Length: 484
Image 1 (cartoon, rainbow, N blue to C red):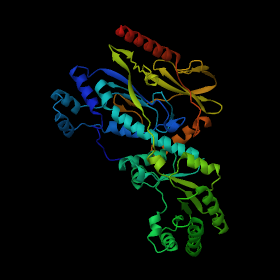
Image 2: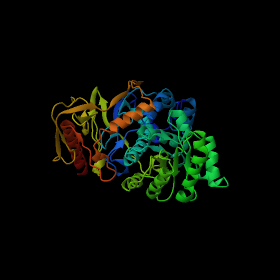
Image 3: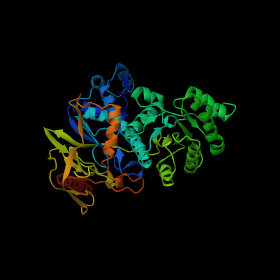
Image 4: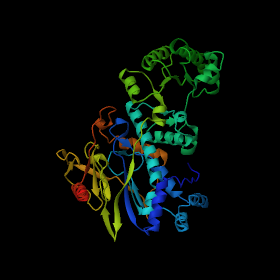
């Protein structure tokens, strides 16, 4: 939101505790490198759409540890006055690179990287993860809904289903960035310039003596954008006939047209087709049909398969309160020591949790002829940009290879902060929305499938792959010696 926010202490307590250890150990100038990434696609899909960078920028720009914060931390009787004084003056002075909001992203590739002193890098971890995880899961959920709807307009109606008021406002914003045409959330509209739209509720019908009276009253005060909810009693035999009556007896004589009807219950595929026939027979060919009722990707796909006739959809729960999480993580990948960068690795009995070490770049290959993205490549930061012919190798199943030619390549991680100074100009929300729409066009349809999507290539460069294998081998060797 536009007013200055101070959520600086939105961090996990152990970040402050670890920072205290670093401070008292004289390590305040120690530089560390972190990658933010996720291990599997959400919603059983083939991709995710990045979100949350806008709020990460707000958090860092408004980072300000106040006297009130220090007084609170002092109550723990745990931290020295020297450390508290250090925290009072703490600012982010490091480098941060990230993929822009609205970018399709994939598992096990760095979507955000940080280089900063050890205390700064740890302190901001919680806020980075919270904003990226929430922004990305909502943007992804909305994009999947849009994909299932085959380009039909989607209105986001999730405010009342949101996890909280601030969370619902943010969800409505990210739904718009994903491509929804607007939101019912008025605060989101005011704060972020998202188009606000809506129809009417069943209570508007029930509070009148009869449905026709309710429709007529609504039409009188909303003649330019009159959309009537027709399923309160009997959609086909009562609701739609009453809507037509209002159109013929009030709207048309006064120079208006019935803009639309909404159906919020029942067999939506059947009702929509019958509704279209009734409206057309009444000469209301231009009256639009909106469908709603706990719609998700599967239900929308079913509507499409059954040739339901509709002009737009209203979706709430399954965007604003999506029943999944992203699970992004923030892991140490390197430290600086005596002017040298030393890669770090974390091993795990669960192989998926073994991280890829080193300071990295992320490249995306685009086929020059089709414009489709054909794969991503994670390299060490000193490696040159791939040119000419390149062979992608699956980092786990190395016999799976893909040689690509005739491609354009793009460095996906853009500088956001350098030495603590913001160098990235955040596009406005409409530009981010258009960027998201255009970027999504570069993803193959097989990757976008709602069910059983094709796996997108994310591979490691030869040098990075060998570094990882060597570090795993060396660490296993050390562990074996310790067990003897």
